[in-house]
Amino acid sequence: MLKVGVLGPVGSGKTSLIIKLTEYLSKRGLKIGIITNDVVSNFDALTMYKTLVEEKSIIPKENILGIVTGGCPHTAIREDPSVNLRALEILEKREDFDVIFIESGGDNVMSTFSPLLADYTIFVLDTSAGDKYPGKGGLGIVESDLLVINKIDLAPYVNADLEKMKKDSLRIRNGKPFVMISLKSGEGLKDLFNIIEEELKYEGIIKS
Ligand SMILES: Nc1nc2c(ncn2[C@@H]2O[C@H](COP(=O)(O)OP(=O)(O)OP(=O)(O)O)[C@@H](O)[C@H]2O)c(=O)[nH]1
Ligand SMILES: [Mg+2]
Image 1 (cartoon, rainbow, N blue to C red):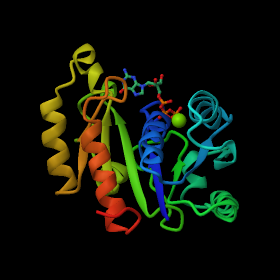
Image 2 (tube, protein in one colour; image 1 turned 135 degrees about the horizontal axis):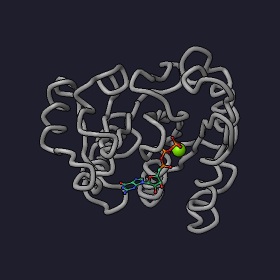
Image 3 (cartoon, rainbow, N blue to C red; image 1 turned 120 degrees about the horizontal axis):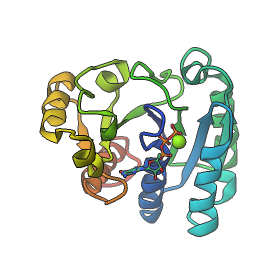
Image 4 (cartoon, rainbow, N blue to C red; image 1 turned 90 degrees about the vertical axis):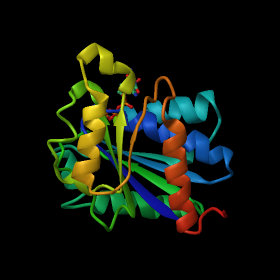
């Protein structure tokens, strides 16, 4: 089983990304569980439930657990991940999952997951926050296993230079993978799926 931690600034597309990956991987026959962390609500767990359970019947409702963290979002995924570890335990008792996604509450560029919680981390950036990112760096942008630059469809509206974002990503990540996508238009999703599939093959979760 692979524990995939998804993090990044507020509204960058973490929930949308997990929904897309869950749809894709479920179609490939994998069993997916999801844990969401919201600071003061259960909004993300409900969004996942509406799409993945009610509308599309892709996973059973028991596969989604929503945590309301209170306080600072990264405390629950880094300094004291006990509530998330407990949620993992509950899910793992329920079923033999292939992948469990853990969404962090929206945070800043320094957020990271405790290695106790995530084997593989995806940091999601929002193009409309400006093309200064990812060049500004930060632990999450530099150290995550995969950097996803989302909402590239919005680049023309905010004068974001995608070439600059690409060059900065290459430089700052020093060879680690990144993808530039739009979860809205579907652009770049094939690249994203390929990278995740490669990781799952590497882990022996799917066969070549
Ligand atoms: N235009 C555009 N909108 C997007 C894209 N991806 C996500 N959105 C929208 O952006 C908003 C935020 O997306 P979420 O997936 O909820 O983002 P999040 O990172 O989970 O947000 P928090 O959990 O609140 O931090 C939603 O209204 C999405 O529909 C994209 O590629 N392009
Ligand atoms: Mg979310």
